[in-house]
Length: 260
Length: 128
Image (cartoon, rainbow over all chains, first blue to last red; front, side):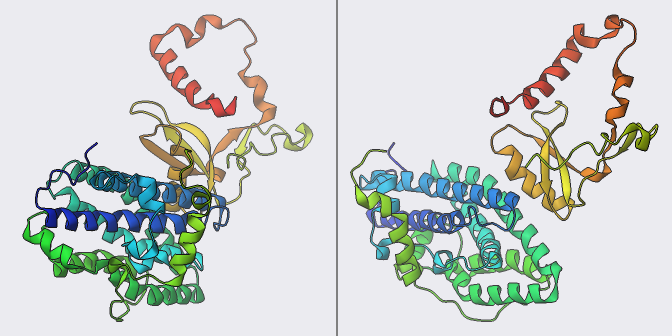
């Protein structure tokens, strides 16, 4: 398979689209890995199974995008997922944080899913097949992920005053990094100029906030005012990610050439 | 997951149960029975339970718990304690006293289809 990038003649645009797809894949890989850490530790067996399943789907989505990127430089999905140094990953910092409590993972998922839905819509309208078609298909699964997060968030905030306080603290903590999901680099400008992606950063931010605000206020949560914390899209990651990557690649590093 | 709902003490000694031939399932308040429809126009089949505080959460959890490995187009959840069941003591009411095999529906094509789709779900390989 030639991948999504082969059809783009202009090397600058191709590089920008690669970066954009890499972000998408890395976001899904990293949040998927964090969610997989709930396996065996969920608050009840049903939610444990559901979160584990969501984790599998997210990592599956990452794979779909790595498969589109790989042919461009001859990388396999495994090499892209596990074979890079931390600075080469393009996920937003929000996704790499340790789970902490269940409420943090739920808040994070509730903030992430509207972003992911917007991104898949944008990609679905990019006119670049097969990625556009894939994005439309993957959006079906993301819808459930958002539903799971919203349903849980509503229950957590309805339970008791002190519980809502915990959720609010998780939200306050997550908010600057959630805005970091929308961080742009020159790649975004290039793709917009080339007509691949038809949304300005301001419009993307407004669409995300419009989606997120009713979910949060509907749960009685206050929207934080803190400014964005950025850097993830340029490869700046914290020690939590380095630890995560070491753990995630432990088996592979023992024999990178092994056939599984 | 499919362990929560049991026909309530139908095993209650007859003397105690008296003539009681039906009763609500003796299930905790947070147990929901899940019914899955594999294809449109198939009947909904009972596949197991989930624990959840309300119907919406029960559906969210049932979706992951019961539709990952089997096809599904529609889910029902019902509070298990809202299901009324005949008791064990009433079993003999289903046993014909005279030969009524002429009434069995097995030879009707539509009936066979209904039985088969129910059978398919209740005899999944993992249960064998």
